[in-house]
Length: 178
Image (cartoon, rainbow, N blue to C red):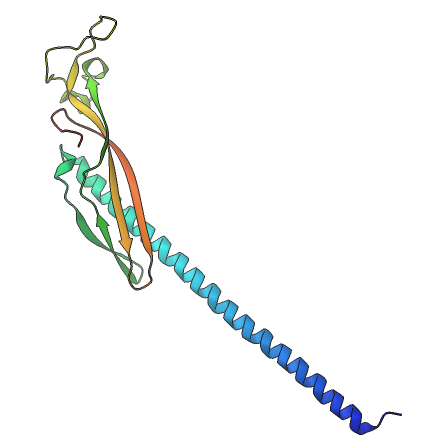
């Protein structure tokens, strides 16, 4: 027969093993929860930084709409508040023209206000194609594609976001694609 003293010792040992297992489970759960909380916070910070750069890019596009020469828009640092955080968005100067294409007089519509300023030609000569035919006369406007570069570096959280937005615009023919 088993003596009562031996049973009390095994019960204590099993209780200690179960207690250690439960303690390890609780510690793991707390650490996992903290890690998930940090991951969610980092994702939120990145989304806020993306929203801040998008907002500033839209402001730069509005500046571009009121100028004839995008190269006059200088680099700028713009503070943007989103919730409790404030991000400083750095926008590069408009210096990256991707493509430059003349607008032909034949493609203009005199009834459109946007086309009216383009009807004066910068050059009365027309170029000749390889087949000997004359090309259409260019207007006094060009269509150019530019890149707007903006970025945020948050020293507090370590978040870093860079965005590049393309824009196509009609400019006077004298604006060079750099």
